[in-house]
Image (cartoon, rainbow, N blue to C red; front, side, top):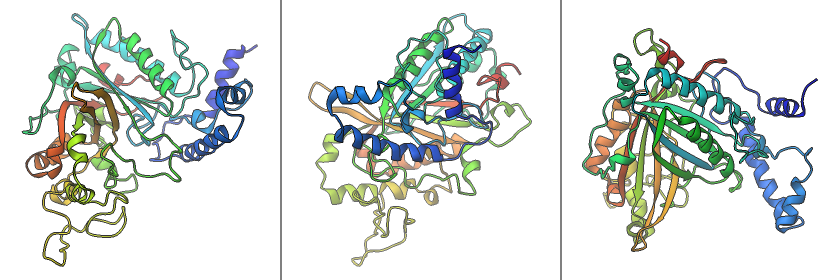
Length: 430
């Protein structure tokens, strides 16, 4: 006879089907979740009101989770979750270093623990040694993504298995990097559409890191909540600019080649289906930015602030015309505009998939906001992705006067685990 707990877990699994195939860029479930969030907000405002009204709506244990709460992203698959899936409302990034004396054996045990916990939490089940923080919540589109830093391989006795694309990140002239908040042996990216669910996952994995690894750095981010806009829109960053319009799309013929490592039978075969994550904490100098008139801000970016349309004309999704000339003979998109300098056609076709979070870590003593972007870029080869583009931006991007890169890291993110596997198994047991 099944226990009530096992029956409850089975119901959650039924709501959160998991497959081993590729994930779509935007699932029907996530789109329905966005619409559901809008409806739920209307009910709270127009219903009984206050804390009692909200509690009454959740008091019946038999009531179905909201569509946002029930939305799940499979843990298993060709690629790890959290790369092509829509960015969630809450994010946490954390890097860990192996402790002295820990090696391959300890790393295997840790990745087993982490993968088992992530598999359970992304399906809405309770992990081992649960603290019950998210006990009454569904999976809320939780994704957990794991990666390995270059320093990990030597400590784990795998110096001969460092993939050729996992290069040392070069220094750029505009960098102001805090090395204590950069790099790391192991990396975790967590995203969820509920803040408690995201924190719960972070806390569980942080506790499980002992005794093999210790926390090196951790950062918190956010995006717009599903349902906050009338229809799904490209996100805005803290400068008020629409950010991500020119991201490669899963429907593009070149998407897989740009984002994911192609199949290989060589020493790097353990990275098949994986990707490389460049992580940068980019502080926005918002006080200086806000002093610019809107027209000047648009010239710095190369897009209309309200609509995201390129200054060369059209709508947000209209391809930018870098050759267009204004009636006065000036370039429609200024020579140092961010979208011109960063464009694929300005960088030999180099492209990357940006999937970041905004952050705000309070204020400096003089009232300056410590806020900006937790930039995460995914690519099949960092040297032909972020590094190539940033080298161009470093010397001629008008936006560089209003941002500061303060943290930097590069991680090899292996392909997704098959059922019964843990993340990194093909590396650690090869």
